[in-house]
Structure formats: C-alpha cells, structure tokens
Length: 439
Ligand code: 0WD
Ligand code: CA
Image (cartoon, rainbow, N blue to C red):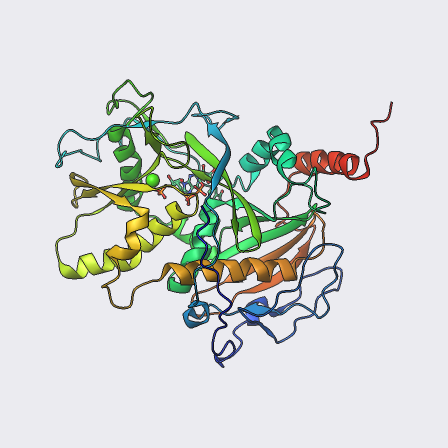
C-alpha cells in the first residue's frame, strides 16, 4: 500500500529567494583534513541529485546550503511507503536495553468522557525522572541493529550487489525526522544534526543546541512539573497487560520505554528508524504493529476560537508528523485545565488530520513537510560522501535561515561507538569479500 503520489513537477523558482547567505557562523571549514571549501551555491529542491554511493564521486562539488522556503516544497506528495515494523526493544527502569516488548503497555479507555484525572498526583513522591543530561545518541538503535542484523540483511543485500551493508540509506530516531518534517513551519527552535556515513549507510544523530541546553538548565519548577503531566496521563490510561487495569497509585519512571523499529522508504531514501510507542490496542484482534499502536498526548483545553486555531496550526502539525512517520494511526488526547486536571479525552485519527485543518488559514501542509524532509536527505547524501565513522558532518539550522553544515574529524561530535564500528566493520568485510573465517 504505497502512498504513491509522486510527481515530476518542479518548483517554479527554486532560487527565487535572494536573501543574504546567513551562514557566517557555520561558514568556517572545520575539517582538519583541509577538504571541502564552501561554495556559494544552494541546493535546489527538485533538481537532479548527485548519486552519492561511495563508488560514485560527485561530478561537481556539492551545494553548500539548503533553503527551507515553503513554496519550494509545494508539489505532489512524495512516495512514502507504508512503514513496516521490523522489530522493537524495551528500556527498563534503569535504562537497560532488552531486545523484546516487555515495556509495551495496553490502552484502557477511560470510563467517562470527563475523567477528572489529576495529573499532579505523585509528582512529589512517586516520580523517577530520567537524567536528561545523559546523551544516549543512537546507542539503543545500534544495539538493536547488532542484535537483529540477520533480519535486515537477509531481505535486501544478500541478493543484490548493494554497496550498503545494512540495506538502508538512513538510520535515525523518529524524533529527528519529526524535527525535519516540521522545519518549514518552525519559527522558534533550530536544530543540529550530526551525520556519519559508514558502510554506505548514513547515521543521523541530534546534537543539543546551546539554546536547548540553556532552556533545559533553566526550566521553571512549573515547567518541570508540567513535563510530568504527559507521563502521568499515560499511567491513568495504560495497563501492563491486556487483562489488567491501569495503576494510578504506582510510580512514574520515565526511564522506561518501548520502542518500535520500522523500515520504510521516502522517495529513493530507504529509512530505518525507531520511535517510542506509548501503548497498543488491547483487542487481540487488532491489526498488527504499527497499526495497533496508540500515541498519548495531553494539551490545554480549548475554550476560544483563537486557541482552536493555534491548536490546529501548531500542535496538530507536531502530532501529525510524529505519528505519521512510523504509521501509528491514532492519538488519544487528554485535554487538561491549568491545574493539571483532565477534563476531556478525544481520539484523533492521523489519516483525518489533514481534513480537520483544511479550513484553517495560514496552515501547514503535509506535502511541504514530506518534500522538505526528502530534499534534506538528498542534500545530506550529496554532501556526506566520505565513508568514515570518525567523520561527522554537522548540519545546522536556525529559524529564518538556510540549512548549512561544517565538517569535523575525530571531534566531540563523533557518535558511532567503538563497539558498533568494530562489530560492523569486521563482519562487513567478511560478507562483502566472502572470506571464509580464518582458522
Ligand atoms: O539523547 C537524545 N538526544 C535523544 C534521545 C533525543 C531523542 C530521543 N532519544 C531517545 C530516547 O532513548 C527515547 O527513549 O528517544 C527515545 C524516543 O525517541 P523518539 O520516539 O524518536 O522521540 P520523540 O518522538 O521526540 O518522542 C517520543 C516520546 C515523547 O513523548 P511525547 O508524547 O512527549 O512526544 O519519547 C519521550 C517522550 O515521552 N522522549 C524522550 N525520552 C527520552 N529521552 C526524549 C529523550 N530525549 N525525547 C522524547
Ligand atoms: Ca506521548
């Protein structure tokens, strides 16, 4: 079931934006090897992309920045294949990795439409918060890949002569892709994405921006508490197994997580990514994952037309992007008052969100989100051609700017751990060259 709406339509004026090149901070070439001087060329959405396989040197130097102007991305919806779950994993209360579904929970519909859940309950005494100063980068996904390589390779690379050992072009977190999808509409928060090519696959891992670090270190007590409310709502509505009931008297521990790993394709980009899943439909006859998964959200209750409009224009964009990517079909939203009491619960079907926002002026468009993400990935492929786990291309974006990048070798930005590089390189060479194991 491909969502196939591909077009060959070109944007009308791909370079019609003549604003200045605001790259000064990222213009410096940080490549210690002395390669890669910046050209003042823009990557044009819709133009032919350089094939970026390791054996194909680009015929011309890659362009140095990517425009985020929305009108460049207003074409037909790109091909986005139905995401397929290829695996899952769990993180326990101490953030330990398990290659199984032990943390998957089951949705239990609230008894009343106005449930009066008190989201503040337990914040003081029954809350264990994950240490968000610890940056895990892609580690959990990499662990999953090592434990499940046979599943990935048997599908694709075993038969084909693909130079790419994993059979995918991109490995990342779903959350990073969500940020890319929403970039054309984002006016507040920029991002930094570190990219490394190894074995033909591009690994994309977020780097915390200075602004995000400041925000994290300076959160108010009120904000800290409100971050807890979303997890508490999950506790009111999710049970540990299909037969039991939620336990609102228990401890909320945000180290615990269940993550799905999905494979899909966006135009020519084969993607493998993981995302945290809140719970599943408890009906045993429910469809197979990810179609039985449910995303839980909380939001301030809507009482004015202005609030409704803002909810459609800003919050539904983020909600849609996050769930659309892994093929999670439903969101259950708890609307709360200022005191953290849930006053109503509503279900949103992802496939109906674009209808819901149709009458909103100045609203976002799914096609712009997907086309931008696709062009960004093409841009990355054309730029990151050196296959080396020690090299990071740091892609940087600030609101109202173009996307730019800098190059770093053996730096603080390197993120593929030795245990992963070692394991992947030893077995890749074995498989590529068909060497029998040495005795
Ligand atoms: O270290 C890092 N910089 C990151 C780690 C950044 C982003 C994610 N992660 C990891 C964590 O291991 C986490 O288990 O991401 C996992 C979730 O990944 P995702 O699904 O790709 O992230 P996203 O879609 O942004 O968030 C999904 C849920 C959130 O729910 P809501 O309803 O608020 O969207 O994952 C939680 C949060 O509950 N979450 C996180 N959990 C741990 N670490 C993080 C985070 N950094 N960000 C969101
Ligand atoms: Ca959630």
